[in-house]
Length: 333
Image 1 (cartoon, rainbow, N blue to C red):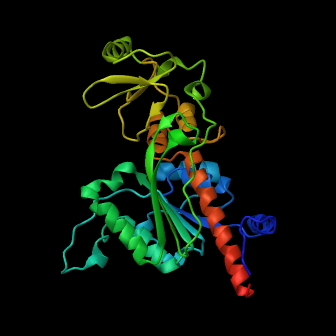
Image 2: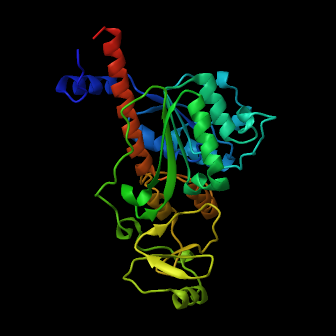
């Protein structure tokens, strides 16, 4: 029997599977839950989370009603329930370059990626999705990225990777991230295509902004004087390493550790907490616990939710098709 995955019958079966059997995931290096939000919007169910930063964990609790477990290096795999997909926006630490004496299997020891590798090996989930900065692909002349991919493949996963930009998924923020997806079985998977429905700065900027967000006249004048070109408002500027100021009708990437004046709206004021959340595609009712500095840190460390949701939908679709294929094989079709 030949199976047409796009026939009406199969599509109906897929819909029923999504409704009846939810795909579960764990949220590692969870931050404030941006990756979780994307996968929940696509229909997934979170069964475990881990985040060592206490302030981020407080924000996570305020929005999801649960405190994530702490330091993943101190959590045994046996303490983690069974799940379908491992999710992790993991920190990028330098990988040691170890010679033949130690062997290839030790190359990730001492890095946080090793914790992901450990859990994948012990729990053997159907799939994973990892997120990191674009520069991970170039770190150490590409060696770091090569080690990551080879180690994931050595665990028996079919691995896909692509750099995606938040600008292509409805947000006025240029934020490029490497997305790495893996599946235990060969599946029909493609990364999502850019969407046409996009928000503009006008859509995310607040009106009647409190005066506390406005910078001193001296800062405004300095930025204005160094601005390389003039464009219509609203715009956002950032200062590059050479001191040049360039305006764009979108935001450059939010950064957790950037200076207070890293991004300025019309060279006049800082972004509000609500605007930072909107630039990452968080829901309007999402709550940040703590100070402005904490908000900048937490949102800057997070992910573009619509981008993650788009990837999640493709992953869940691929897993559902795989499950349908397997069910036919079991029935001898």
